[in-house]
Length: 162
Image 1 (cartoon, one colour):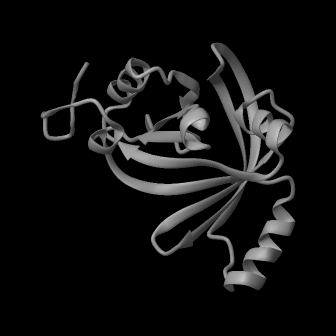
Image 2 (image 1 turned 30 degrees about the horizontal axis):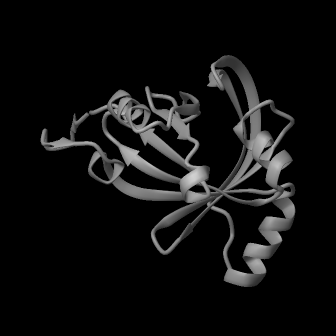
């Protein structure tokens, strides 16, 4: 099965459907420890720190409301997002419970959210969690469980044109 890429050409892979790799996400239990570590190791201060609430999120086929703490850094043109679960149930708490801290996801910017969701489902990787971004403005995200083949989740973030 093929889907149109950003230029309207047929494709069936995420490389052609994405416009950029823009974030690496890491799940951690303690944001204060990360902040101190990033300062000591890289000499960096966070670009921002947040406590986010996601409402009406789809997680494993159920609609949930959930929270997560986050620290954001810019490093060599890539956003580092450190996520600290706040009790779930959600994709971040599930990961921490199963694996402890570690690489959670790599995120790709995409133009057509539903096209990517369909393309990933067509290759046997359905949505694990998705919803509206806390950024607002129609921005949506989705996580796909690529851990069996890649060792991490794949996230997409789509921003409406305009």
